Image (cartoon, rainbow, N blue to C red; front, side):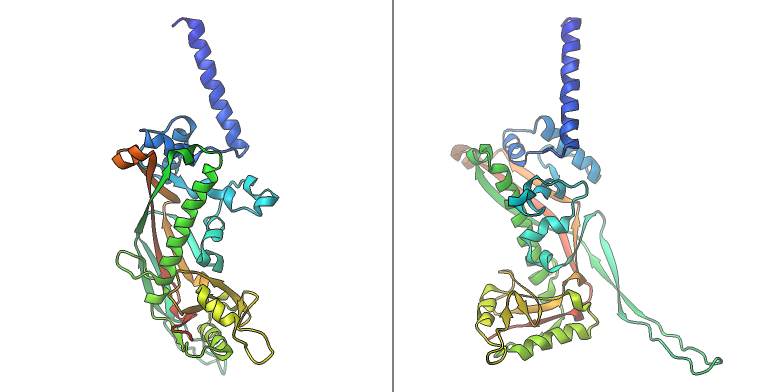
Length: 349
């Protein structure tokens, strides 16, 4: 290779590097997930995709594995900003928020649970079970009686949920594959979050609300009096009143949308509200159940700041069919910070 060829190649590399920098400053796509999956199914990522996943691993403080790329939530920001038809898909963000990203895909995120990402070690969350007692002094010489609050700790360790997905190579090469795959990943994590928060059974799963000792209300002939009783029980536990909302199944919504509060006064579930509080539906709530609570008092911790994506390039059946097999891993845990701030009604009739 002569000097002119060497200089030409160096200039080409410099030009490509500057072009990538300009694209990043302009909030252009650093990473094409559909292209990354397709490349990994053939062995390894290339070009800007490879640079991107290496940088994400470095920022997360983990070792980069070429076959297990680490994808942060920031890569999904363009699917959740604003209204799509009004330019939402074009919006970028320098500091994307996991709550905003997950809200369209998770009912409990919409209800307002507290989400913390980027965790590394095991977490211990303190909470007060008995508060300090104040005392009024009758005279200048009166002495205040000391009181001691009771504290507890909630230990949280990562529980990993995995989903195996298959899709065709043809889909990965189509123009709309990128948005479809991003949405599918977010639906997966959204469903995992709702299941963990609402009905996680503990041990290998997080311990969710229905596996925790929370308030109860009868569900027999459920009426307006029962709904306002649930709201009162949550408020009696000093839960922030403005954060109280309900989550039930689609069948419960249908039932309560047909049941009047009183003759001629409207229905129990009306305009997406129950007892004048927001009401949501989720198929992750057990059948015939309704939960009322101040949802920010549920803490969801996500270890790392995104997904671990693994591609299986050795799937013989997929090779014959022209399909790609991918596995998504997310590590998370749930803590109910104040069980008294929630109430459930089961077997609603």
